[in-house]
Length: 474
Image (cartoon, rainbow, N blue to C red; front, side, top):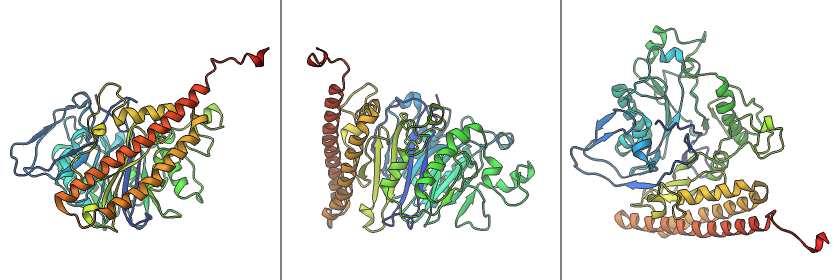
């Protein structure tokens, strides 16, 4: 069974962010609302020969290098049926990777370079790339060589970042892809369709591409434009599903960051990169990843007609298994710079918890997720919190807003406090300190969440319709 990642991606350059950090973010949306995940750290490997990886979804297998960096990952629990899908992480050299957003090439291009059934799919992609790369652009080159050798069984978009650069790579046929560097002063949003537009083949500092892609397009008469080389036009789709499932999400995100711009939510040619009207914060990204067209007629919880409320697919879904922001800061030492903001369970109603990436383990509530319902597990617990809020949305949404605001205030202070208190610690001592600090953050979040949960339960009990006031009915 292929787990489709019908995801939403946000990328923010270092001059577009409020603190000079790079940020890449994504919702991991799966086919089923119940797809338990865990959050783990894969330790570094040194001089270990004979390591292999084999996909559980197809016949792909690969001999792994002898040395590997430690990386964080958010894999499926039921990997033997659903595939590994490590999804997102940051390695020891502060290179971040998120994979993947499902992306669909058109039938014209696929006719001449079809997908490769047993190629490198996203279920193994982070595992065979992130531990071995040293920069964002290195990630593009490394993955590009693997796609050239093994092919791809699906259209996938991949996010890479380091402290300086962000690269977005779209693999659209069996072997062809293009990657674009996001300008430092810009942001970009993508949502399950080809997003990269005009490609400048004379600018390798900002664009990279698969070998022979221009010749492939020319040979098979794939460029529909009289002028230019528009990757979206050549390889992308313009379908009804795009208009109601994909482009609307880009529209809302751009509306949030650029409210002064009037656009159509069904426009298939919305720009890929934009300059926001203000500097972007992690909280801004959290809002967009959890959003459902608030303050428009298209909000499922809003005041539009039934048709309007269900016209477009929301960004935050009940089948968003995790959402993440991979932030590489530039105003602190490198060994404390990488933060993985992880919302496991769904971003609309539950918090993005900050984890210092320089850690050697995650909390047991995150790394030991059960396939069966278990409130001790972070994934099940926060899924339950979200379900409870949604069940009485009108009554609980303000409580939830206050709960998330309170935690975000704590997280901002907490990250600064841990960074400062780390002092001159380095090496294993620092890693141990940051690991313990992460666990304390998890514990505080759970404590606040329990109080929020308790208040909702009390309010729900008081809202019961199975009540009767004797005096009022005499």
